[in-house]
Length: 398
Ligand code: ARG
View (cartoon, rainbow, N blue to C red):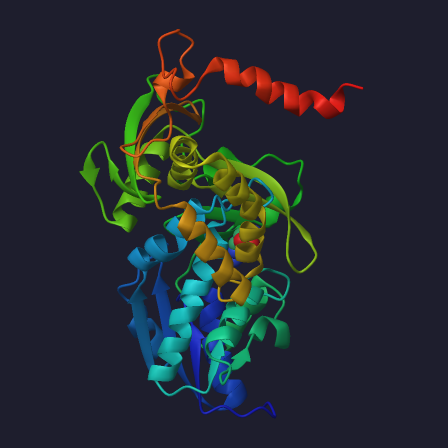
């Protein structure tokens, strides 16, 4: 028994091995009640039998929240508007879901009268930081329990032994060779054989994207529509945010678009090898940039681009609800007012190409840029360029 006292703890629960053990451990350790909470962010796990399973393990209640639309609308799309790509490579699928999951976690905790929140993230990863920074920002009164940092359990076999000892119902699953995190934005794989950064992933690991070898010979062309930087249609058909991302995952995944294999710098100070599948997100980022190329003013675009790596870092490090993030999001928002129009994208053999962009509020002038003589002599007089260059060159010619 612990010296800390809790009456009722809200546990982020997936029904898997780890959180089943945690549920029982909390009951045992703190002699408290446990409310289980499950967020649906598009992880595609069976959620139907979950409340029964949680209660069979000893939970007072189990609350499931469908957060899919909110995830894409309020987290994924703002990240795309701000070109948030961590270390120029990782599209932040896991990092974006964590603050949302934690936000609803504290809501559920408060609604059910809990005095603590518990999560199943380990002590070596980014996710513990993201969850707990969000708890701190949104519900400083709630205590935090992170069993992986406290208990003696070290491995999966320890967990299985624990379940056998206390007859905890666990669905027999094959040992997962990787740590997988899935949501509507991506699937991430870490650990296991991937810990050797030289070792290529097995083809059988990938669930969302076709291999380049098996991707169809014929490309697919699609047109994505954006309104103020927010994607809302594919080939003229409008979709809700979650539907649109789901559809793009299918279209781009079939062509093998969106795989990334990298070694990243975790916030806690470790390097980690991760493999990601982000088919729809990859297309949305690229198409969004293409639309910005005709709708953003040059200097505004360049300023926005300077913010992007810092924005990605704040997301990665878990500072979604920090003051500097609010400031940054407000700045990005302003840049998106005119990012409206359509982009044509060709998907083929593991890659994508932008083949066209258009906008009713385009800043691009065919007449002004034209190589032909005819255009826009009243606004762009080529004779002005001589003086422009002469003054620019003054300090260079000595
Ligand atoms: N490395 C990625 C990140 O920090 C993915 C983490 C995935 N989490 C997991 N529990 N497998 O965002």
